[in-house]
View (cartoon, each protein chain N blue to C red):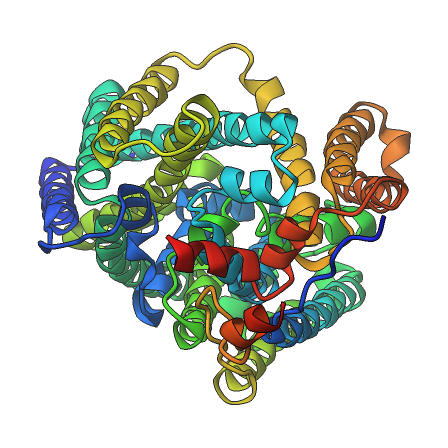
Length: 101
Length: 501
């Protein structure tokens, strides 16, 4: 027996896209600090290069953190849609659908 | 180290002032709330703005550990721990974007204020999931809280000279008072104050430690060069851990720890989409500040105080590099970090006891608000007494429970929530299989190292749990229409019920 299928909430698709974008962004961040930290820091500590007072690998990781912070704030503030978080979907007419059923 | 009496008295006075402010802020009540007890008490009415919510989110994520034991770990393990803790900056972003936004809509539909009741609804009222979830939350969160107040009382002992046991009791009473009186709303007011003190602490300690390092070595760079010569593993990211272990630590700290038992408590407090985004931004800024600077102070402290016990690096640095009043403020700041975390989780435990176990599972439905309130008070007093009692005499099984808490918490709740929210085919059998498989594999990989493939045990456990979730869900029937409508559809069933009432 095939069961009744649900009408998708119009907001969930956008929220899913946001979730996906954030996860992918986080994945890039994760990979970057791991690779930069590992490959710039794997030499002999006695021969490290320094930048702004810290070992180069650490400064680079700090810069990556800062860049991702600024980019995330920009996207949050200006690109992401602000969804209604009320239980009912604002773009769905609950009454009309019920009438036709 | 000798601490003179005036510093101790100043630290004590600062602490008393801090506690009084917390209790007053927490207890202050606006009259005329008509919402049900569960909603107004646990979700703070569900309409917090971006500022308060961002602070609550950040303060809940950055525990007392961030201000005490993590600087200690950065003191002994070195700079890579700073990087691991720095990933906390984006944890709030992940929490809010990946789960909380949608979770807020869903929880609003089913009037859920606790993680247990949300999972129970999603997985078709399955009794094993319904009982395991709140019980596991009580056990693991209780364990976590006991560790938090232990470190708080030890800090008070080292700063003010107050005996450990008195520190514990005062800690318990202060938390109990403002949490019990104010609930989620009171806690959120207190969190704003606590967040401010935590930030002042971070800045004061940075100034103190950097000037002390400059005084000793001239520049920060030469301090690190000296450290590289004397203890190279501290400045190198690869000396202590392998690439795979580093990757697992980063993943565990930054990603998997944030989606799970705390998500519902975070989601239900937010007002709307704007406040969700604003709170994300604020939590990112605060967590980056606290998460990078505080551990970094631990590593910087290593350059000037290489021989102290690692865990005491923050109080030691505060007393050694800052004037008396600021040492007191640092004490209050660390206490604030511990308090805010304890409050958040205490409310979490209580929502599990009162809403999940008492209302949903024992009473099976509607209970009067006055009765819920009474059960809540009794439960909270018992939980706090148990925490203090455990801290006085830690139970012998603590090591095993500790290992279990990662497996039974992260491996068991991460997947059911994530899949339940975003995959409409996930059903209760898949969830059960992933919980059992995840916990089981976690234990296997913890004790038989070759099953972990060089990673931290949690990573392969999550991979195995995912496979179980997908395979078992696809082999068993899809969830019912009522559930799918609430979690993926427009919520027509719920809307009709509400209207007909």
